[in-house]
Length: 323
Ligand SMILES: [Zn+2]
Image 1: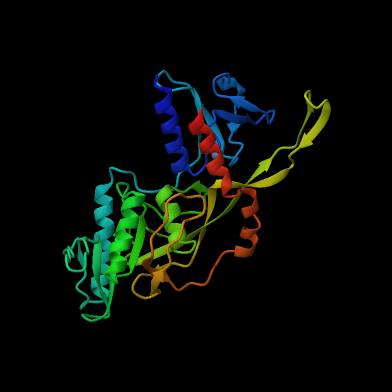
Image 2: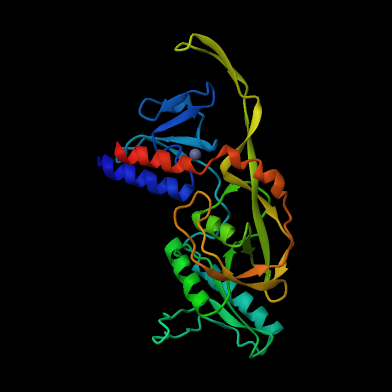
């Protein structure tokens, strides 16, 4: 068993999940609220949860890897990897609809934009590209998210389109309409959420050129009231009996469905920024942004930020890499 490799794996997983709370090998026991180590924990000690983000944790004991806890949360209902046909169907449906609404817009799938050596612009091939309002209208590139699209690739593409002066719209394809069930967003969904100021654009079959903007709102966990005797301090203690926000589980708050060619505008020069909790910055870019006013309670949400200060992730991961 290669423990060093295991530690790197766990940090990578934590980064993808958005929480480093389980990297240390400890989780909390629901019954007692006490920390418990994966090495000594047994299945019957469960259920467990992550002390950092409050999500359910599962104990993993296997031969190849060190015993550990993993986050066990429902993922967003994104089309799985093997669904390339669905990806294609999404591109075709959106493109056909845009072609219908803007017949002079030269809407096309996979049309290459050649390299421009003079201006040092590399070649790109947007999933869908065309112009709104005819030949000299507003240019637009639409990218349908696929699981092969990593954060570095997303950043690189955003940069290329930006330098070409073309706004970009990232769409996340689903198989079915999204509901308001709480879930854990994937890393790229969290990036899009930051990129579009708290919105991710979802699409599902039958939507044509309409997407539904979704905001990731606060989901809460009830912390059971418990009492125990702290032997170290020699004191009786009490805790819990209140709601705490989850860090990585979010409640989707659906905005009004919007038409790509109608309810959006070109947002130029969105400044470079680093999303909260993430490590990689998104470069300066030009985005295709919906015109909806904020439909969630931003003021209420801001109150929850104090629960998860930014430094947390860094501390845990650094102490782990030393061991
Ligand atoms: Zn966690």
